[in-house]
Length: 322
Figure 1 (cartoon, rainbow, N blue to C red):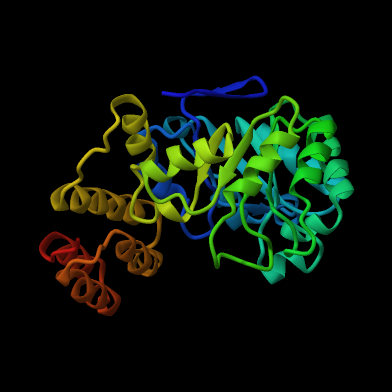
Figure 2: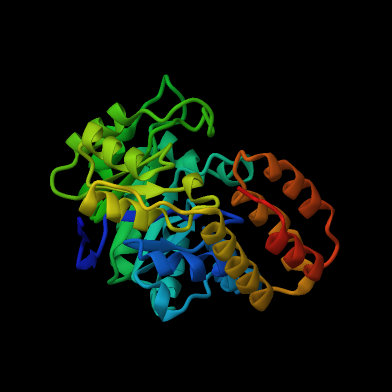
């Protein structure tokens, strides 16, 4: 097992679960924390919404002690607002705050936030410095390689962020222009690692198995991995990686174990959300757990037609899903 130190915070495992909209919500994190990732993130929050006291934004930051270490990721391009938002994050008891400089969505980049900040690496340094002056918890940064292939700034941003006082940088091995297409470039993540003097560099992109995680860390030399879309239907991925470290093998997870995890995820969602919201969420979440077996397509179609929680629960219990 490999620990990871980020400032004064020691993670028990160098595997971090990424902040993902519509995925790493409270019910997901209740399930995921059983498998002990090194760090769990809530969904990304907008600094302006946080400062305006938006109820839905604060709800996204709900957590329990079992989820620690717990991180919050903020998105914004104004240094003063980012600092004020980070103070709220610290007051809420989070162990770490991360500045998002990688989100590619237009509504985020429109005001220069998210991956829009990659157009101005020095601005990233300014925001990081402002946040660090406001809080005592570790401050980290999540980036992409650059805005597009003609404007790669990953090494520059690592240097700027480290000089500003960031305690770690996570690098997604794609540009903003790529979105989530193509393959993540782990050699360039390795370049980012080489650019850092003393802080950890964490790699992100295309990690869907324990073997992927270990091989990509070997290829890049990075200090840890941030797992994102590979978590869909695999909240146990950190445990798989831990076992692969320790034993050289990955646990076999049979159909009934996967079904049991999905039922628990269903119950956590029902407990946390309104019935209407739970139905909407489980049509998405339920499909994450299905594989390529003949019954999977039938299950997905039936789940999407379901109009009640009772019908969904019966489908999950009775239908072949993987």
